[in-house]
Image 1 (cartoon, helix red, strand yellow):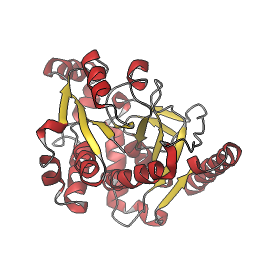
Image 2 (cartoon, helix red, strand yellow; image 1 turned 30 degrees about the vertical axis):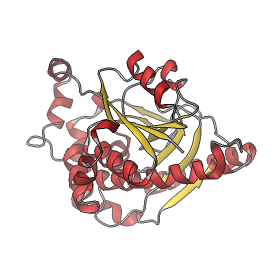
Image 3 (cartoon, helix red, strand yellow; image 1 turned 90 degrees about the vertical axis):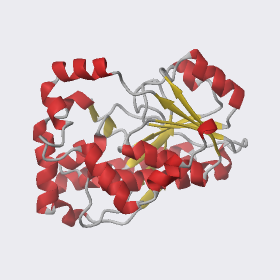
Image 4 (cartoon, one colour; image 1 turned 60 degrees about the horizontal axis):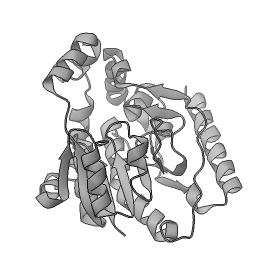
Length: 293
């Protein structure tokens, strides 16, 4: 099995890169370059409230700081794992959808590409390999888009803090679903720790899927998504959301939502059974969230 990983430079994305290279047959890591200073300033000027939440000195809770703290706690050697990736395996592009990137994928000829984060992927990129997967840290189709773990936490939807492995689609987080993963919830968890628990599961979720014969003609089921119940953009995140998360953590609100880890592999089932199980799971998780409110 030959894999290519596409991910960025956030604490969670570096964690995934180090873990995936250490535990899977990853030929290359493709990384989109960060946004220019000019682009960041333009975003800040257009969305001053959102810009303030990115500065931990002003925000009562900030995602990258929380995630970095979770990485240090749950995987203290992750920085060394990331730094140990051989430079010849790391490839940075101004645009992941560029012809240069597509050409490199053509030379590598991977069995599959796994994407964690990154930009909106073009149809040409998605066609560049036999199979392109998206690992979204949100429960699709309930929470799609950006910062979904944090939005769910801020809204007290602790039971809907999880991840979805899906086929890549040109619609953001809109691909056909293969697996839902719900991390264990323990006292003291935060959006950052739940995100890292999901990221930590990615190598095993991929190994299970690929070892099940998905790349060797055995076929698999991918369940089409309904329209997303919630679709969030980063610029919708406000100081009020940050205060909600900080209050939830301070009050220990998550104590009443403790659970064990759950993995639901729809890809193993016939299409009708997979659809029924996914619909049943979503209905149950939404009911639990309503009752908790």
